[in-house]
Image (spheres, helix red, strand yellow):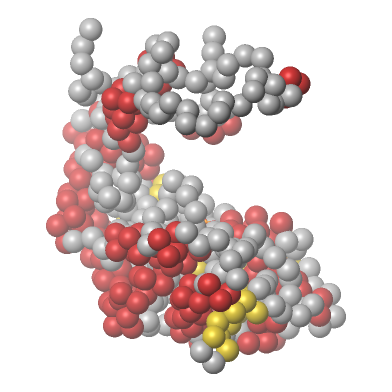
Amino acid sequence: MRGTIGTQDEPLVFETSRPGRRASSFDALDVPAAPADAIPEALRRKTSPLLPEVAERDLVRHYTRLSHRNYGIDLGFYPLGSCTMKYNPKVCDEIASFPGFRRLHPLQPDTQTQGTLEILVELEEALCAVTGMSAVTFQPAAGAHGELTGLLLMRAWHAHHGNDKRRIIIPDSAHGTNPASVTFAGYEVATVPSNANGLVDIDALEAMVSDDVAGLMITNPNTLGLFERNIDRIAGLIHGVGGLLYYDGANLNAILGRARPGDMGFDIVHMNLHKTFATPHGGGGPGAGPVAVTAPLAPFLPGPRPVRDGDVYRWGVGDDRSIGRMHTFHGNAAVLVRAAAYIKAHGREGLHRISERAVLNANYLAKRLEGTYDLAFPAEPPMHEFVLTARAQKAKGAKAMDVAKRLIDYGFHPPTVYFPLIVDEAMMCEPTETETPETLDAFATAMIAVDREITDAPDVFAAAPTTTPVSRPDEARAARDLKPRWYPA
Ligand SMILES: *Cc1c(COP(=O)(O)O)cnc(C)c1O
């Protein structure tokens, strides 16, 4: 028998169960007990539910120990490219949990929810200012949901104008949700290749553009972290055949306060408030993927939408051009309040500094790593994230996955690996603006040390990571054969 400090095998809470142990106690009844037949016989359970019987102390320790196995942005650096794992200021959580927000019910009459409506109207104005758009829907619950909303808006637009269009063009570097959303919305995916510098191949695009192109979906900086210099020409080509431009704004860190999708020619933008605007993410919790559009597309947005009438706020209903609801009620309201708090706390100046530091941090880290790992596209300066290739490391005996696993033993969450798909042995790093130079230096030192181990200590890679509860699970099996529930023997 040993204690629990440092042990890795935490039993299931069911296995610690002992009959009669309780983590709660109730006062004696001060009302008459219900008669035995209050619930009809047919509806009564025949056996007691199988619940763990555990004392409060053991319950607290069990879940606290489990929580210590979790890695999150509040524990350390999280350079997961494309995911924007930046530190979320706690003040935003605090404000979102004010009773005035927490206790609201979406069916309360407008007269009782003026403050929240005012915040939503102001958030819409702020997001329009950031994106260069005219109107926003807050309904989509996440980025991919925003993409679907945006594509349904495109469909409604084309249907309204009698356009018969079937294809949506997407770069081959795109986030996986883009082609999935296009297919879901009933369109065909047409893939445009990237050129040797990691930008859209304009000649290939020109050859693909025809009257049946409903639109183009892209992000800028693109999914390789590079700014599409030809965005004007791209927009001209798509608009030239009556198509619409969709901006995947999951991550706005690179352009906040500096460049606007609206000015680049985009018609529709979704944003991930849970990446750029202070809602923690990564654990599958609630997010928000509001969609912003230009004025001509506004009537097609889902409704109702918050509106200001003089000093009064209300839910405005649109007309029959609206694509209809994408979410119950008004979306994930607490996430919206966090975003509003974040934007207000930073102000215009602060948002400007976010993009400055996000890009500076990415470029600093890229420079520190450049001599050891190859940049996948060295010809273009990275923006808020950059993609390395571990091709040279693979030739020495450790693939991107091995480097990533070993980094964990150095106490760092690895970068995104094997994405974007067009880069061999991809390692995509996004340091974000919230990290100090000391953290970036420590991470670079660890990355360089891991590279050195490939020749100096090649044996360490087979077992790495050795500092985690689980070392190298069979990831395909873990996803396909997931067993989240315990069944009694
Ligand atoms: C994260 C991300 C998405 C999807 O957002 P979810 O909220 O996870 O659905 C889409 N596009 C890009 C570029 C992303 O980084």
